[in-house]
Amino acid sequence: MRVIIDRFEGDFAIIEMPNKKFYSLPKSLFPNAKEGTVISIEIDKIETEKRKAVVEKLMDEVWDD
Image 1 (cartoon, rainbow, N blue to C red):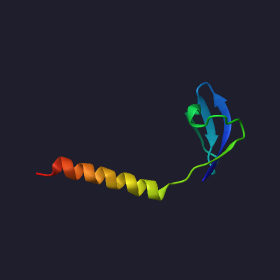
Image 2: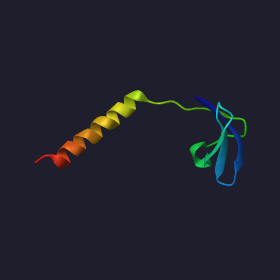
Image 3: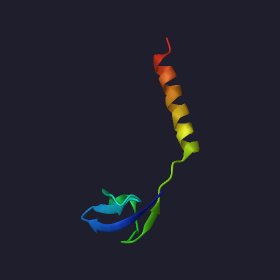
């Protein structure tokens, strides 16, 4: 998904979503970005699965009798 930085308001970046809705996010998430910068947001399936495995292992250790 691509979003566009519409403007900055204080410590927030106002981003425009593909559906034309606007959201504010901390501008620290977008270092060196300017108004009009296009940001790509994607789901990292591999990293998600790695984290899921770590959490499951920790849960197994906690609940192991």
